[in-house]
Length: 339
Image (cartoon, helix red, strand yellow):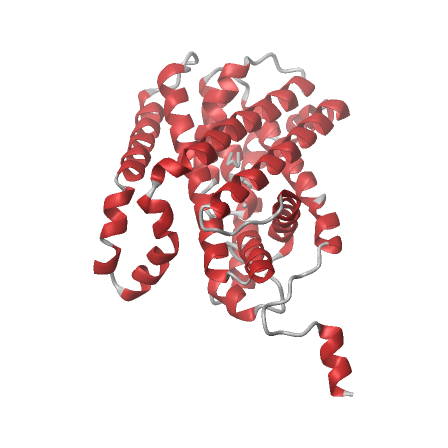
């Protein structure tokens, strides 16, 4: 979850891309990737890489393939969640359209530098397809926000009711507090919507895009429910990976630890949470009695599974035409008219 487990860039759209990326995207990408690799390198050096690689070699291919397949099924659920959120803004499209754009975003996230590469791609594809760029951006922002809210809620619920390990108060208390704050923010969103006009202009413009969601948070409940199911599915994915390693760990422990770890991995500090997730697993699963080498190997396996899933997006990336914005002629027609 992720999210994400979050689970979340077209050269012909420089205005949108530049708005979604920092001023030096390649530098930001290199820093995030380098930091993730550095953290993993430190973990491997400190705990000896040889046993970790031996553990990784035990993974059964069938379990790895099943985890990737379940991860991809979760992305199909993400597409439906996004479709529901876009429909609230009167952006109506077919499910297969949203599914294709989700996979385009997955693939883009692997290679395009910048924090919001995949999200920018989804906004561009959906916005150009329906000539509703503002609403498309708002739907993607809401999709990301709903995913984080569900992640925080599930982590808090698991910390309160599934803490059989048990995890210490230093982990449980912040997790519950974050979940409570997310609930308070959700309930207070209509009040926030009414205060948008009092905010600075830059914040007011951004807030105006998502104001329909803030005014009616109850309409988000179906999407949040889907997100919670998705987060549980991500925990099941990693339970399957652990079973492939021969680890006898109860599913309840994954439902407890994976959402908490994904809260940390969702921070945009490294590429796809690399290093942060492994460190979180080391602490959380280690507190529950899992060997440190097994926890690190499990984190690396999950990173590999998400990367493998992301690569399947290449099919959608190649076969899905980039929608042409209203008023623009397709590239071939432009050339023809100039001759």
